[in-house]
Amino acid sequence: MEKKENKSNYLVQGTILAVASIIARVIGMIYRIPLTNILGDEGNGYYTTANQIYTILLMISTFSLPLAVSKLVSERIHQRQYKNAQKVFRCAMRFSVIAGGVISLLTFFLAGVICGSIMKVDHASYALRVLSPAIFIFAIAGVFRGYFQGHESMVPTAVSQIIEQIVNAFVSVIAAALLFRYGVSVAVDDPSMGPAMGAAGGTSGTVVSVAVALVFLVIVYSVFQKSNRRYLRHDQTKRTESDRAIYTAILATILPVVLSTLIYNITPTLDQSIFNTILAGQGYTKEQYTIIYGIYSGKFYVLMNVPLVLASSLAPSVVPSLSAAMINGDYRDAKIKVRTTMRYTMIITIPCAVGLAALASPIMQLLFRDSHRLPASIMQAGG
Image (cartoon, rainbow, N blue to C red; front, top):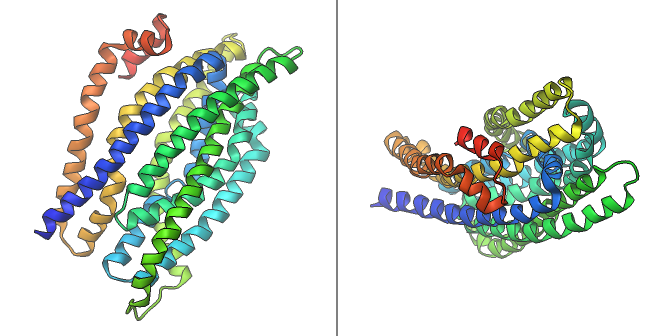
């Protein structure tokens, strides 16, 4: 009976995250349409370049912290070690502030070198500098999300994601339009300044939205702590874990995730760097190859990420119950959870792959009013 309840609970929590991901991605896809129209393909190239670098730096620093905190907190809650669970939260928060702060500062000061020397897209540095504070803010928000997920509650994470996307949509579009006009007005001999400043305005939405989501999570945490103090008072844990042991556990948990996700997510950035270098060697201008990459990143990549994010939404919710099954030595239950999660992803991704490939041109015309052959061909190949 208990196993059925646990299975039902993690599926329910996974469904909550899936629904939140659907809403967030639909909002994200909708606002990218006017954002693409404002920035154009060149501005989209700058915007996506900055976002890809931001994603990689986020993964190196603290992107995997929610998963680590969720796993470690869940293990201790399952063993009724509430004080140790709270200590995991405090240690993870210190780790996130230091790691997120250092990477954020380095990103701001080295944006010109990264975008110019490595990516060959100098004008993306404006957007990357605007994005740099988001690394620090996201690191802190990630610890709160992992803490709630460790208590097997996905609602705060789900709601914060929706709030984040709604704020991002409004701020990004408005700021992109305003800064695009400003860039055009101050440009003297550089026609790319308008798209570059517009891209910076688009990325400002990410910073503001993550900050608003963090405020929401802090409020929820404050309310949650009122009931959590009761468990802390009755905690009979005899041995409190040392900070060193917790930091070691955090690093041991995040390193495999960082390495695996980094390899996956660094590929588009390496592709772009190689792509830009080859086209530059063939005589293409920066504006031309930025426009081509803008089509790929601002249209195809946006649509492709929707089914991928939906498919992976169950993964965070299975971690707490999977950790509990491993602690109990119930490997059969663990395998069932993994298989169920895999089936869930296949049910979503296979129909989406077929649909995107078969309806590539109509989708591009409907969403982006783009009837050119190149965007549709990219979608068919990538489906």
